[in-house]
Length: 130
Image 1 (tube, one colour):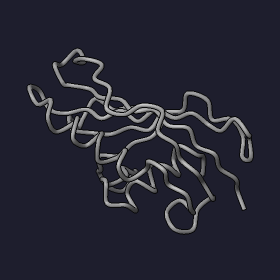
Image 2 (cartoon, rainbow, N blue to C red; image 1 turned 180 degrees about the vertical axis):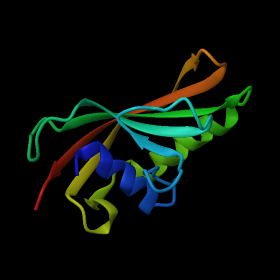
Image 3 (cartoon, rainbow, N blue to C red; image 1 turned 135 degrees about the horizontal axis):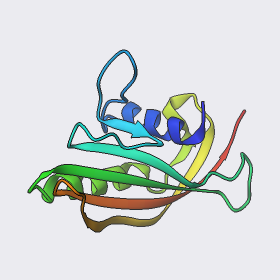
Image 4 (tube, rainbow, N blue to C red; image 1 turned 30 degrees about the vertical axis):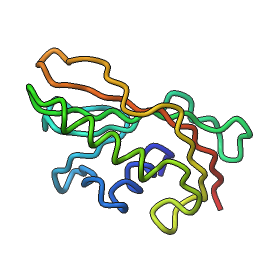
């Protein structure tokens, strides 16, 4: 399992959504944001680095809302930051050991082509696989 998938799984573990799989629908994704559902969250890598890197990995989490609703994706981005900010421990309880720092949170980047509001947050993740 890769780092951004582990972050998405950790977010599900924390009650921040449901990871979509081939077997069931969800609202948490990693690597690629699908066109639907409208209200969704995706974890992207901007520089995954390698386990044990002293510079850490950089990830971005994108929250998208429904047409005309800026409040929900903004509040969801803030809730994710509240949960992930200053995290120190094992992801999902038994995943890799990680320390997460917030670079910035809930930055509005405007609307997508369908008029859905998007907010992004950036994090630095120091992690190691055991």
